[in-house]
Amino acid sequence: MPSTYTQNNGIELIGTGEQSGTWGVTTNTNLQIIDRVASGVGSIDLSASGAAHTLTTTDGTLSDGMYRVLLLSGATEACTITIAPNDADKFYIVNNGTSYTCTFTQGSGGNVSILAGDTAILYADGGGAGAAVVDVSAALPVLQASNNLSDVTNASTARTNLGVAIGTDVQAYDAGLQSISGLTTASDKMIYTTASDTYAVTTLTSFARTLLDDADAATFISTLGITASVAELNYNDITTLGTSQASKVVTADANGDVLLSEELTAKSYNETVSALSGTTPTVNCESGNVFTLTTSGATTFTFSNPPTTGTAYSFVLKVVGGGTYALTWPASVKWQAGTAPDYPLSGETYIYGFLTHDGGTTWYGFLGGADFS
Image (cartoon, rainbow, N blue to C red; front, side, top):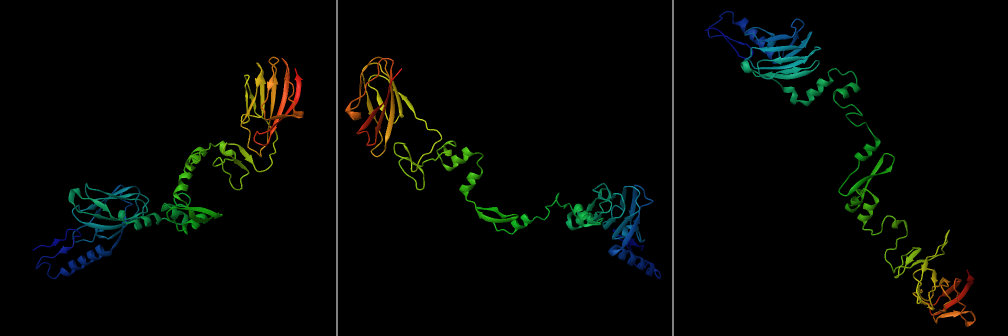
């Protein structure tokens, strides 16, 4: 019975009763094949192969296709290496020591290309015409990293090959980041600086976060629930009329009158002028401090809304004679020597002054000037 051979590595299987007296030679060859398949390292010189090379496993003969580790060298151009035969299962560790890409193929299935200087683990599935070669090392990150390090001459090159160039792919060491890395964070916490490159953690409530995302002052004020406008906040805003606030200089009473607890010093002081009309005009003390009237007939004045007792109030009244008409004053007005002054003739202007400090119970009247024309 003649010899047969194993499918994948061509080990000769001596037929029963065959090779009497010579089987030792065959057995030794078989053992060498097994040794080569198990851990053999073979140098594959591609210098004469050009763009194509066949990696053959020959039955019963030590051949390059039997090596476990293949060291490629000598390529003069990109080379396609065909594993033969196409029905043999193969498993290789390949180091491409050439300057060109070497592509392993076995059939019309997938191929594996190994870049210059790279190492790969691959297997051929022995599928015949449709056989495929598969890169096992693609699933092994450590091996991929070693491929990138195969031509490393210094730390900088190693980092670049690994895709970890400092300042481009990874963050350089930074004292501030180191400080942050030591912090323990939790819900409703924020990081802040306590010194240069030194950080700590403090509370950041959910309400505070609603303020941080406000785009402008108006939105910020709205979030706070403040009814005053931005312009109004440039002044002392009293929370509630009719109340005084501790340590506040400015207060307001229930009538909206603003009160100062200390002296008022102003660069310029202006008074509101209120024009009166008719023959029964009312001087409303809430309207201003200077009043004007051009008479149109005999006139009777009324004074209203003076401040309460204890607060002094005075006003000036300018009367222009629209004709020669008598003026009648409130009974609460007290004149010097008990006699009311004259009133303007047609075309004349008189200036009167009035003062009260008891809520209008008594008004002190003065003629400030007469016969202006």
